[in-house]
Image 1 (cartoon, rainbow, N blue to C red):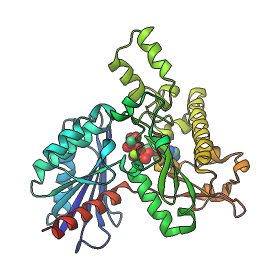
Image 2: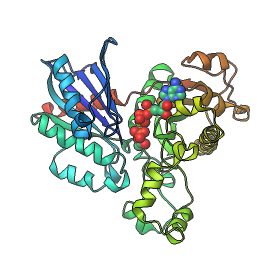
Image 3: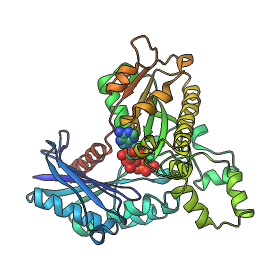
Image 4: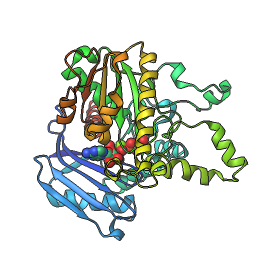
Amino acid sequence: MPHALTLNAGSSSLKFGLFELGDGRGEPAPRILGEIDRIGSEPHMRATRQDGTLLSDAPLPGEDAADHAGALARALELIARDRPHAQIVAVGHRVVHGGPDHAAPVVLGPAMLDRLAALEPLAPLHQPHNLAGVRAAFGAFPGAVQVACFDTAFHRHHPWVNDTFGLPRAYYDKGVRRYGFHGLSYDYIAGRLAEIAPHLHAGRVIVAHLGNGASMCGMIGGRSIASSMGFSALDGLPMGTRCGQLDPGVVLYLMQHEGMTADEISDLLYRRSGLFGLSGLSNDMRRLEQAGTDAAREAIAYFVFRIRRELGGLAAALGGLDALVFCGGIGEHSVPIRRQVCEGMGWIGLELDEARNTRGETVISTDLSRVRVLVIPTDEEIVIARAARDMLAARRAAG
Ligand SMILES: Nc1ncnc2c1ncn2[C@@H]1O[C@H](COP(=O)(O)OP(=O)(O)O)[C@@H](O)[C@H]1O
Ligand SMILES: CC(=O)OP(=O)(O)O
Ligand SMILES: [Mg+2]
């Protein structure tokens, strides 16, 4: 039976999915979904079958998942054990950065891989791991179609004013642009909205993807108009370990007066800032909510403040607001963060229903709220699996 494997590698995690493709025309059916996190430190693998049966929920020996290639090998072992007859005909990869040229998924080959590797400095927490997954998958499944699905693709047609910085034009032409990320998640949410609330999908919507990486996107008719992330995955909201929006004067100051090198600044902004840097404790929202220290409370307060500012800015860019959607680990699960983001938003016509919020319903605004507030669990994996299915079909059609 033909299957697609999906791979979504983050800085220290690898999400994987096995999807049955059937006749290649219907919705790919998830068979196994899993994640290995804390790769390189205390790796842990959790995987379930589609019916919720637990296949693994245990630490892995450190040497078994010391890097992403090791983690992928463990994931493939689990898949082969549980579904030995699955024939993997396509591998879909989340590739965070597609640069200016890609508004849709592409088939991967050596030349494309080289072009995407040139973008590694723009997404150092993701791109090298995404491409390591591609190389490992070429080795493991030499006959399969390898498909790259880009986080940036969803934003490629956003308006020029959201694509540019106020730098001389030559830099824009060289690719110094605001790309925007989390596009697979936004694509999924736009599709779900079209199914469950077509009138909202057609309107002005802000999606807050709040995970370990976090960004917000303003859409009209399911298309990206503006987003909080820019050239790299550093801009916009503060994140688990990334700083979010920062005055570039700070970078100059660190270089000129603190004598920091580019590598040191990169480490500071990508790995030691955000919720982790502000709290001095953790990048993990659950831990911060439980910690109850002043620094943890302040880190959360800054996170919420920046989301609210971005919400106001994106609403202005959209010319008003019809719906706000929360997704990502924090957006889907944190009742207090959703409450704090929505507090005192009556001025924009948004009123949260606290009981619905606490119960985690799909619609969490009051019946009188002009702006609908929704919680929609995102699913980057199915977006990748659909792209792999479509690419296979296109190849077959082309003979
Ligand atoms: N019940 C919860 N309450 C608060 N935060 C949560 C909850 N569940 C998950 N999170 C937070 O979600 C974040 C991870 O989000 P996720 O979207 O899974 O991350 P990634 O970007 O790695 O895919 C972590 O900060 C985690 O603490
Ligand atoms: C682009 C980005 O920040 O991705 P993630 O949320 O997976 O870290
Ligand atoms: Mg994520």
